Length: 401
Image (cartoon, rainbow, N blue to C red; front, side):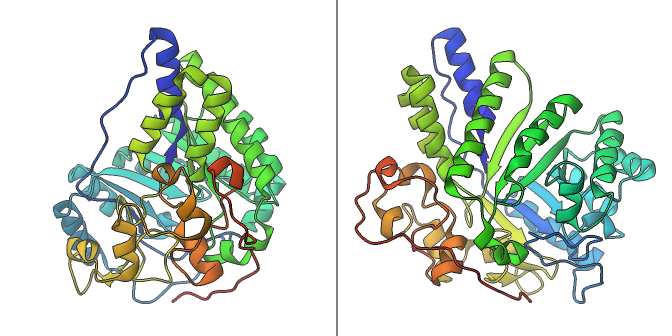
């Protein structure tokens, strides 16, 4: 995850004071865990990495099992849980689990499509004390409904945002950009401003689940750059004004390098400071500071690696699974620098992006360490001289467990 606003706020402070505020590097003991507690969902979204449907899936963790795992996560030093699905609000014990997470002092987030949140549900969410609720929107009105395959989905999600904000719950928008909805970023940012929504999460399309089936329709690189320009400009205006809005991106760590280029163009006096801060950030942290547990209790390096299992929390404690580097992928992910190849291995900014998102390379080539085909930066921008043609993105199909 790339927190644009942290860098923009630091730049705004530097402009005011004349000193860039370098912050100590964070080294959490354990990873943030994105926990897909349930695979069932009331929607069948076009880009869902979990390939969810409105049906029960056998073998999911029971309440008692989930509570036991929660204790193991605490012992492993996990600081935060993001409760997800499927649609987590379809799990009958979701509030019991969330209340226990809050009692154990986890930062507790909820990732939902929002369509099931009525006034009573909003009351429960507020009473539970979630630190943050992220609601997915793919566009305005009918555009969102088409992605979600449900007429009226947008209106229901927007109503959920209103209900939660009325109860003082911190709410954010989650948007996944593809070639089919790239024109929706600006309207969604306007919605964020108009509704005074706290956070905007921009997700690049990653090749997993239904998103993998759509990868040939991934937004072209130039459209990605234009989207990032708009995000950076919007975040900079908010930082200068002292607004507490957060702008975050995920699933493409080239964003850090692209921000450095933005600073070099707009605020060149701070470019060296920002570069040091970006190196301290360190880029992709799958398998290190980010983990995933799926609905069956299987552990993965992150949510996009459901086709690669590290262990089963029913058989081994989470901390033991997470520390085990006998798995070749985990050994490489925890290596620094990672053993990336091709243009990624030659990139002069490897210390910033850390080889970007390995799952795209693997899904396209079968090689964990091949160049990331989703990097939208040119060879000139990353200082490489590659004579071979770049890896091309082609349609791919995968059926998970």
